[in-house]
Image (cartoon, rainbow, N blue to C red; front, side):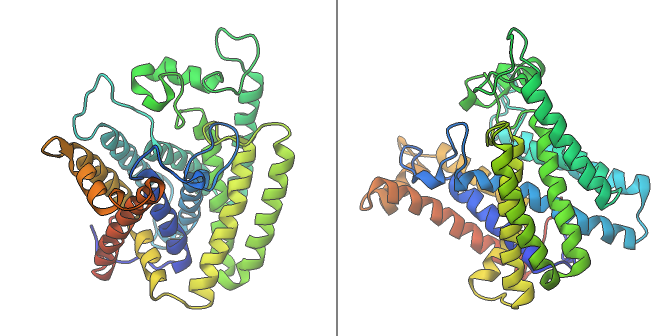
Length: 369
């Protein structure tokens, strides 16, 4: 933990903070059986607002990387040392993700190896190879990784299949995860057939990070105000292009397809543009905006803490019921319709962690991964 605040655009922190807050919201309903449709992931192919959360975070990680690499070089950090520092950060995020998966029992026989933080770590590690070589390498690398991933999905069938498949658990990526990890170490919701954060999707997720890195470099060079038009034009172009690419490969978060990369990258450009407009162009940083900025300055700490707290609330008992059940029934389910009670519970957790975020930020305490 450090009290030093890195100089950067507040819009980056605001966009990242709102993304993390929404991530906590959708991950913590009062009841998984009572959720508003926009707060659910698409069943398979398709896109919902909730499907934007993960790629937004990856995108902003790439954008931040463009700033951090230049900041390190300004301090004389180059070459192998720069790569070693990046590897250490990615390794720490990966290990944290695995630890969060197993908390608090750590049954090694069923410990899930892939996960959100693990995917971020591996994608960032791969993207960093290109980011350190400049914006041209990031652009070419991002397109190449996306093309390779698409070609594998469309041309390589899973073992035992005659033709490639993009159905749930039928793609070669699912077979790769089963072979490497085994079904007991994959996401339980996938029934041991597939994992939405599997290895193959790391290639296209790195493309999302590189998309963010290229955009971040534009903002870094031009400044927030001058970059707004470019961000808006890029957003429109990416969303339109995604419609064309969707004719080749459907929009799918679990597979992290090319059309998914483009449409979510386009919306991420729009989100970043709005955040920069509010904070770095119009200068609005008080009130509710300060909460978003505070969230964005401790994103991984708050994400991990929310997972730990949610797990503990479900495990610790008061009599025969968990603490969560008691609080949920008492505070919300006793009077609100189920779907609203579920949402209010999630909002209460987001609010609680907002207070934590503000406490840490006002004391300039920021955990650096």
